[in-house]
Amino acid sequence: MLDSGVLRSVMLAASRSPGIRRMVEGSRLTAPIVGRFVAGTTVDEVVAVARRIATDRLVTIDYLGEDVGDKAQVEVGVAAYLTLLRRLGEEGLAERVEVSVKLSALGQSLPTDPDKIALHAARQICEGAEAVGTTVTVDMEDHTTTDATLATVRDLRADYPWVGAVLQSQLRRTEADCRDLAGPGSRVRLCKGAYDEPAAVAFRRREDVDASFVRCLKVLMAGSGLPMVATHDPRLVAIARFLADRNARTTDRYELQMLHGVRPRAQVALAAEGQTVRVYLPYGTQWFGYFMRRLGERPANLAFLARSLVSRG
Ligand SMILES: Cc1cc2nc3c(=O)[nH]c(=O)nc-3n(C[C@H](O)[C@H](O)[C@H](O)COP(=O)(O)OP(=O)(O)OC[C@H]3O[C@@H](n4cnc5c(N)ncnc54)[C@H](O)[C@@H]3O)c2cc1C
Image (cartoon, rainbow, N blue to C red; front, side, top):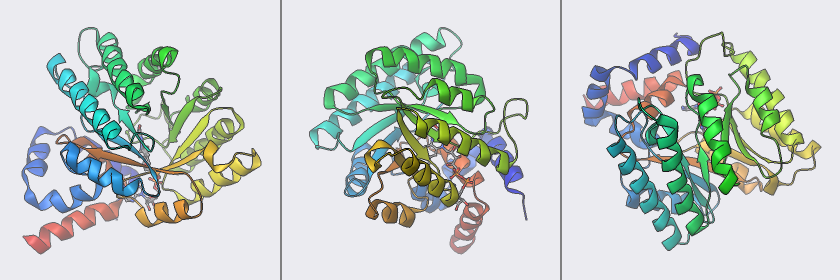
């Protein structure tokens, strides 16, 4: 049996291979498992899924894409977000559905002026969100981008104080970042972190990542922002609820967040218990990197993929 850390490293390495990308993207056989995590490729498709989920949960829509190669692609991404936001407004969904953005999809990985380009693009998306009355959360990518991403969030918050930040408990720095970001009104999504990080900057053992998650939760729950607890780990969800209670936080003062397609029954059950549950819902044609990270998180996902290939082959 493949160790879960090894599986994750293998899948993340595979996600950087153009050959594997062509094979996975080109195969009709992967469609069923991709469809479990990704809500289609068009705005119509994602809005239909969001509408269904929003009956009992909140939603964060992500237009898939990362590491764009030129400014034209950044403009395509911004236009896609603005179209999506207008639709959310027209369909009366903006109160329950926000958007998430990856700065590498907005130019943060371009060779010249990356932070300025990404900030400008993110501002345009924030303007569109404000116009329809919803919010934006800035996803966190690998550790080489943490400082730049947090700086961009700080800049955006000067005009749009509701912009959400994301912190990853696997990084050694994160407890300190939580202290910096636990102030009034600060929306902070805490997750374990989906990237394969070196031991110099990150905890590598699951127990250490989880212990860091709890320390970070303690800081965020005791603070005066809005903790957004992004994990499917039942133990951490229970600890989050306990800490919320201990800090006299009612269910409108924190969120439990999960990914579309992961523990859907738990999502519905938590919402039925009165918890505020938000589902991260990605869509678009650039699903490969996101999909590979999800496969690497659970050996059973790979087995599911293998079964679907065999039974259709
Ligand atoms: C709302 C949300 C937003 C996120 N945003 C970011 C971000 O901006 N940056 C970032 O680096 N990471 C992000 N992540 C991903 C996160 O960092 C983890 O990689 C991912 O959530 C798995 O960690 P876990 O906390 O669920 O714990 P794990 O210990 O990985 O999983 C706990 C249990 O959850 C279930 N589970 C977890 N993942 C899967 C899966 N893929 N398929 C099936 N079952 C699964 C399994 O039952 C597993 O035993 C986000 C996650 C969520 C929920």
